[in-house]
Amino acid sequence: MNDLIIKNFIEKPLQLRKVEFWAATTICVFAMFVLFTSGSSDRWQFKEAGISYHYYEHYFFPRLVRYALLYLGFVLLSFIVVPSLIRKEKVVLNILLIVILFLTMGLVMGVVDTYTKAYLLNRYATIQDAYYRIFQASFHHAFWLLLMFGFYSVIKFTGLYLLANSAAIQSRYKMITRDAIVAFFVWLVIMFLLLVVRPGEELVLAWGIIALSAIVLCSYSFYSLIPKSLRNKRPFLSYLLKALLIMVISFMPLAFIGMLITDNEEVAFGVSMFNVFFQLLFTVPLSWVLYRQHLKGHEELYVLKKELGKSNANLDFLRSQINPHFLFNALNTLYGTALHENSERTAQGIQMLGDMMRFMLHENLQHKILLSREIEYMQNYIELQSLRTSVSPNIVIETKIQDVLTDKFIAPMLLIPFVENAFKHGISLKHKSWIKVTLNMVGDKLYFDMYNSTRLKQEQDPEKDKSGVGLVNVRQRLDLLYPEKYELIIRETAEEYFVHLTLQL
Image (cartoon, rainbow, N blue to C red; front, side):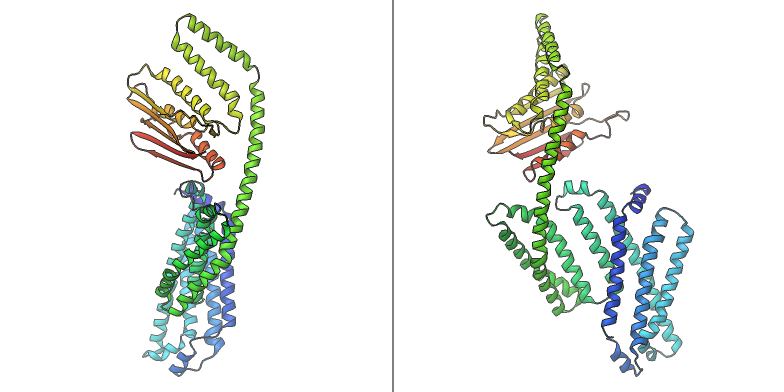
């Protein structure tokens, strides 16, 4: 990750920084609220040591100072020092601020601990020895806190990097959406702050298990549970039963994890049981509502894009009407001339080019066309390219395309970009190269495979680092027109480029 990317992370994601700030503030306020409403659990230790215990002196005010110091230190490091260091601004000053913060935290927490842990004073030979042990532990704790913050910063900027590349990640792993990454990032921030503030192991365990389970369940519901349940007669009941099964299966593993963390069987099983009811009563219905809204918004967006596409297509069609008849008449004239001069290959090429242009001017503007017409256009394109490549014995072009007799329809120009890409990047007139195309139908499913050789591009080749806009557009059209109805696999080795498309028509 270079400096420019990191700087963009710091300067642009203002919303995430607001979330981080308000999460830290909320945790601090909540910790203080718990402080105001709860009593000390150390009273018996003072009594056992024979030291008079005072609630405000030995518990309330020391804790209040500690929480305020941790909050201010977090804000200083997260929003001032670390961003400046990454931008390489005032490096010496910011390092000095970290040292001062470390010394201040160690000193203040040491002073605070002389009150909260006053019961330890009688356990050492001298009062100086007791103070030495307390301050030594406080500076160790301050150093641990700085290490924890460094770990947190690494996780935070990793999360920001994932957000910046969320589209690419989602195209590969459909379950991991941008919303899921944001939710996980918020969970991580709050979890870190809870571990630092230490409001109680029950709260930390509850947040760690319940919130993370909600994120995972919601993401999995969007990815698999709800789409599969919609095929049933009672979709919500089917979805609820599947979610219940998942919760029942996860009950014991989560309880076991809770026991490992807290060493308290009652708390672990209580949190795991509460997690089951929380997910079923809140996460499951909320995920269902959000998915239905998402589906409705997706349908409205599809209609808008469709109408916009029609408008653009109509405009492009009008622009193409400068005089297409003149163009076709010219092609017919060239075709007749080529036949008259016994140039059969030239005549064949002109005829195929004319057929392809008619397809582009008319059928390409339609929402769906016959699959047979799409295949015919693709075959014309391959044959036209074969006229150019037939002069080289090192080029092998093989096609195995099944004749489609049924009236199946497909979005136009959905297969041809793969063929164009193969001829563009896989054919060389100087080196051995090949293209293999197979297409067949089994029921309502179309299976399309494309193999082509790859060649090492020269440094001066303008297409060297370009993967082709056409393939990106095809994937976007598949997502829009055939959601959950296709599988696209693209693999590239040192010698071959492979594309497999399974499409339910």
